[in-house]
Image (cartoon, rainbow, N blue to C red; front, side):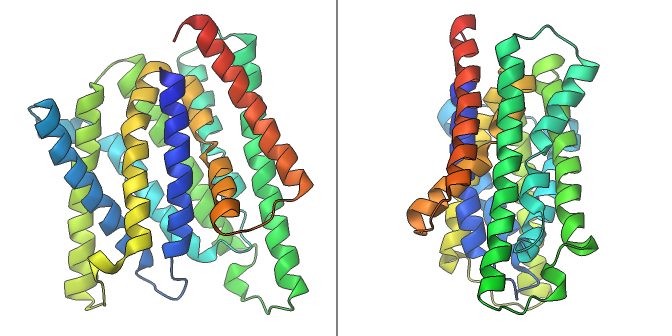
Length: 305
């Protein structure tokens, strides 16, 4: 089942990326905190409903136990939200999408195991395809802006500022995923339900703090129920997180790079809903990633889940 959970995670997060991009105002210095607020509130609501439906008794100490993982995820996501304001000509996408490979490599180094050759091939193909597509995306954005004679602000060019955010995201998210693999899969330090609730309640606390800072301290205009794009992104982020926990608990070393392919789905969705056109090279890269996903699916079937 880990393969299905990983695909569902990638689909949900691919959709979330679409709405993150739509809901980000490059002129709003508090845009990232508003997204944190929306995501945390939705996750908090989901956590309460999940507890009631499954009749789970949550131990608040699980938030402390799982905090190293939660903190790295929330920090990397917040950095990613900030980086959305610099996405035009940065190399954010190819660097960020490498986080899945980072975590897989770390898990393989510290927890070595025998791997099916198809698994290895699938991981390599998916990772290479994701990075290749992201590079093509960046080049297309550059050509379009230059063709329109757009005067590009220095902060949007490939420089220290633009590169810092995706590098930090990749490293921190990769370490978070590595830690998650240890907690959920390798050492079984916490159950899937406890990890999910601990993460979502921690995010809820961050959401409350962000809201207080933006709305009450900085006196910014922030009407939660009017932030539709951020709200849709938060819902899809939460759906993805739900499936992500169970995928990582079953086969972290392979699930991590597969889930990193959510960038592929965000590109496809943007073409469908934003009516953008894919180039032949982009179709080739998407096909490349799909091949890798199929290989991982085949090994999942051969191993019987």
